[in-house]
Length: 231
Image (tube, rainbow, N blue to C red):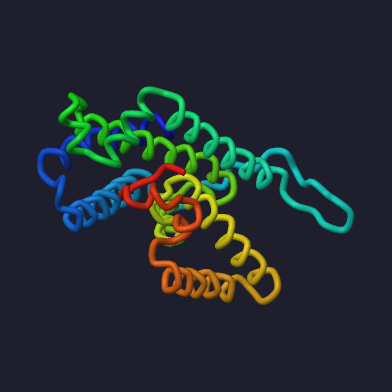
């Protein structure tokens, strides 16, 4: 159960960070990266570095005219959209979402109203880790199961989040669509390597022209005064 296991590990790690590293962003980043390397080494030592090839993608191929695509890849697109919608509903219509948004926009004010900001940080950290575990499980039929599966996507994920800016859902979704489309088109026309180069160059130009990322498009003028917006 990848989502539940990753959520449990991340919640335990978040408790350690809360006591030792909260407020020290660089140290937190380095500690998180070091923790990932530890788990990669641990899993490699226990199970080996071989890729498990016994998982085959379901659904077969879907053909439309002269073009065909893997049905499982279309299923992954559906799951990504579903995850975005569920997270939006969670943030928009639940008490947890209200408290989380309030804490992100003003932690001191939320704490003065009796909100345990540290618990909010731990909960949201765990939810994010559960989503990453779900993503890893869904990608397993395509990439295979190997200890370094996350390293394949961590660079693209980082670029996407930075390009999206502070609008957690709208900015990240817009950046993923834009960068993914450019990467896919260039990779199809020229080759995979040039697709990666085009993605990186587009992200650099985007951040040069829009330092706040694509959030600048989605956040209204009054909302820009707040540090974080969920949409």
